[in-house]
Amino acid sequence: MDCTHTASSYPLLLDRLPSVHLVSDVSCSGATTTDVVTSQIGALNRSISLVTVTAGANDLDVAGLQAVCAANPASATCAAAIQARQAQLPALFANLVSTYSLIAAASPNALILVIGYAPLVSTGPLNTAEQALNSTIQGAASTAAAQGAHIRYVAVSFTGHTVDSPHPWFVLAGPNIFHPTWQGNLAYAASIAGSLLAVINHR
Picture 1 (cartoon, rainbow, N blue to C red):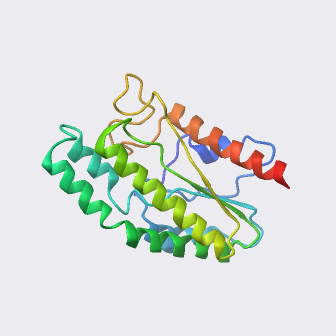
Picture 2 (cartoon, helix red, strand yellow):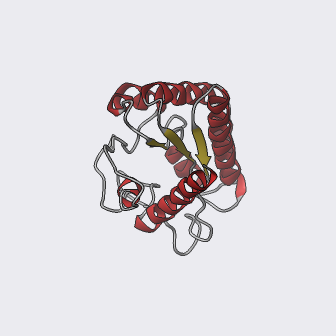
């Protein structure tokens, strides 16, 4: 995993908001839900009032799926790779519900914002698979909320800036491939800030 962060990462951008004071950023590129539970939840405590978490794609190796499907999204190889990952969604759902519940137990006074994934591509079977991933994440957040967690799902969209666009907001090479660029992180931060504002105004 790569646990280094650039100055444009969305936690650091959120730290610029008057209502946010970043205590710790333990997010890592490549982390799975298991990594969140074993390596990251330990940073939480009862004094924390806000937790953001983006997890699930690495459990399914979505970056590998993009690599398989990039050349020909309509190929049988791509279809088989998508089907294999869709079969894992029920297990991912259960892992996410457990992860969110553990976060809520570690920081019972926190608002937990579960951040979805901006779609890598705008159309086609890979986009459909990514929608299924986000639906699974949103459903798990809703289930955790029904069990008592103070949790909200935040959707993120890179409309016009997917990998198949002229100006993508995704890194296209290196260890952080398919992670957001600084423009993408700005979009993530804006979506999260909007959700925070909605929560504040609702109180």
